[in-house]
Image (cartoon, rainbow, N blue to C red; front, side):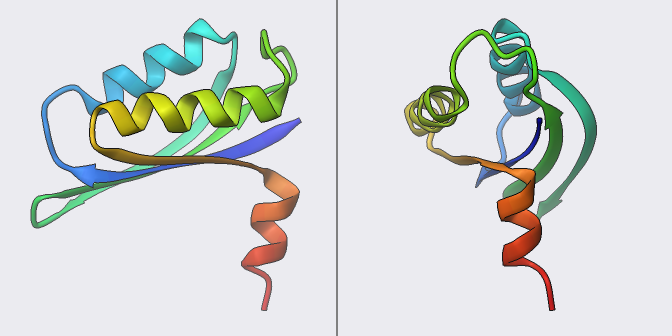
Length: 89
């Protein structure tokens, strides 16, 4: 199963490292990444494979959101099909 993880927040050192470490700790594989900094705002979109995630996807999504909030980041994980449906014209 594939999912999309988005990260938005004030740019600081180590955001990518923190997020990718959290993802790896849950046995989730990063397939692709796009990131940029707009003025002082960090923005990242990751495509991830959650097929071997160590917890159910809903729990993963809630825990990565909570981890981001501790660092002042808005992190959202959603199933790829939902993401695609939301962005279909």
